[in-house]
Image (cartoon, rainbow, N blue to C red; front, side, top):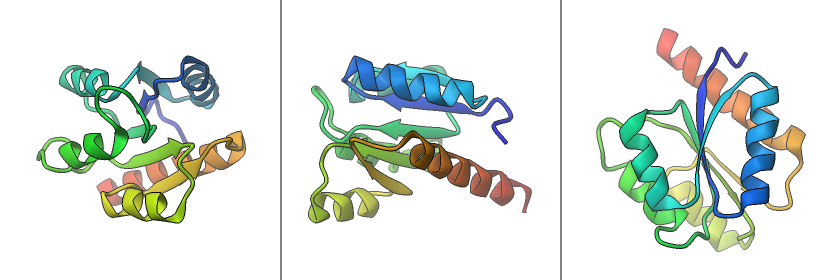
Length: 131
């Protein structure tokens, strides 16, 4: 399923960043990490990933602002996004989906749930490309 797909993980909490990266790497995905939104933008200059998983609450450039910027660029607009965040109130979830996230996963999260969502998004994307 993974086919070496590239995932960019943008998370300011090092332990969460490592946990998600390890989980996805074990599942066959290639992971790149960034410590905040600005670091994430720099990572996009190097390589365009197949999926971005990011936190909402981050220093420098928060997740919502990052995704809004992402969706304004032709090269990065099609990249699917999954928010992984401690912000669990309904308004934040709605805002996350409205800016373009495919899924909004709240912390603490279940590894199986996150992996299922990643597989779903990347599976849909592969099907979309072929179709």
